[in-house]
Length: 217
Image (cartoon, rainbow, N blue to C red; front, top):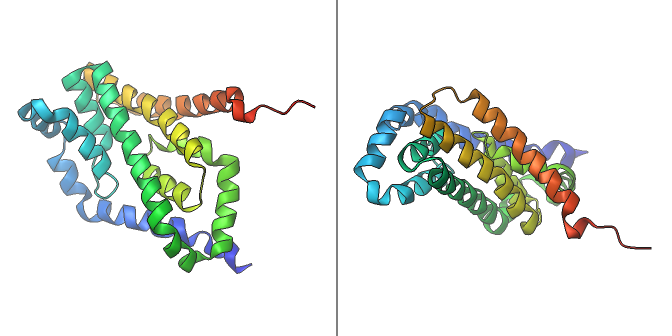
């Protein structure tokens, strides 16, 4: 019974590690990286703004970077298509780095903290619901990093992770880049769309994927 309680220790520690920087430096980063400040930063570094945008989205793994502002600013500078492509790339790379770091460097620590049985239980859960959770998490602050890390720790299959992360990152990146291109400040509809579309795409993928085809009798 103990491992059933300890299984929550890992996500709790991950969320704590991610939330604490927000609590300490969140206001500072929001003021430094406000929409106007972000646009000015990209404008001043127009030649390398695309690389700076990707770097900021990846840095969101470790720092309280307002990723939606980064993506909307990329859309403002480059337009909805190029800005969306850059934003999607940054989101996808962020997910891949979190997954790989957790898979190769974090598992031993996770076993010591929660036990092998807890990770086995997490792997079973991810095998059932991991894909949709990974896809939808790409548009959610804080949870996107935590879910990617948990996927890596639990040994979620790499190919499925990459697919789910891609299906979540692309709609999110293009939606927020489009919002920035249009100059809209209300992102409620964008968040809703970014949450719904990735899940629908994941279920379409699972339905048509050859690996899910039933063997002929």
